Image 1 (cartoon, rainbow, N blue to C red):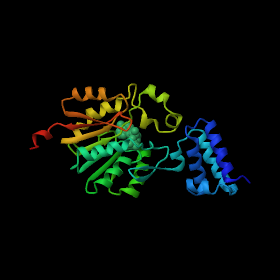
Image 2 (image 1 turned 60 degrees about the vertical axis):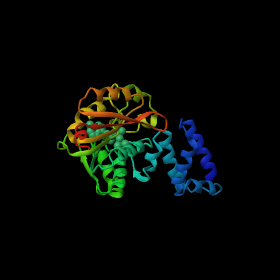
Image 3 (image 1 turned 30 degrees about the horizontal axis):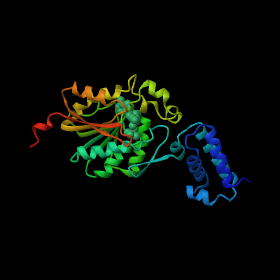
Image 4 (image 1 turned 180 degrees about the horizontal axis):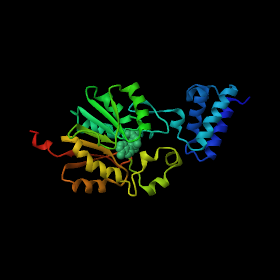
Length: 286
Ligand SMILES: C[S@@+](CC[C@H](N)C(=O)[O-])C[C@H]1O[C@@H](n2cnc3c(N)ncnc32)[C@H](O)[C@@H]1O
């Protein structure tokens, strides 16, 4: 029978050969899952034999990871805003930089009480905002019913008051419904899509990624259609892709209904989050 330590060495070798960028941590995590222990447990049990059942579980996980399936889909979970969220191939895996979107929304619209997370995917942003604002009424929408099913399961666990709605952008909502709309829309251009890592390109939902030829197709629609659903003085806070800030600036300037934009950079100094305010609120502020 193979030992745990030898199985780990073989797993690292196999994932490295398959082109997995960080084979050691992934091999440790997958072996830990196969053994029902932690990464530290894998190390401390290095001299123990690997049971045939654990070996079979490990083989199934390694085969999927070697085919470049993201490790979070294999584990079925990803942490966001300190919340362990269920994820699978129906939803984008929430990214750490999207926490900047949550922080920005909390900062620019601290009094928001009617909030929409548009394109909620796993429900990450809506769940985080619901934790921060227990008194707010929060809706979470997605065009894709499969994604919404994942979000609803996450809301049941972490934020039961959030309401999930299947919708194309703001189509079903009445005029002036929201104080704040947050969105991490699909914003990857067709050319960038073809260059993404296999984990993203071949496994994450295309509908969560693709923003058309220049990546701005959904962002353009958001800037054009969201004003109707916002109250005067309401905010749209959205994530954008690297290099899209100038184009977003032009789109906002050409549309007389917005004030702004304000931009925030992520940890890699990329302009990542944009906030614009629906005109009208400036007349009611003292
Ligand atoms: C980049 S993912 C973001 C998921 C999640 N909010 C996050 O940040 O991890 C974009 C999401 O928008 C949804 N979507 C795409 N087009 C949409 C549309 N026209 N109306 C509503 N949702 C849309 C996709 O199904 C996907 O779940």
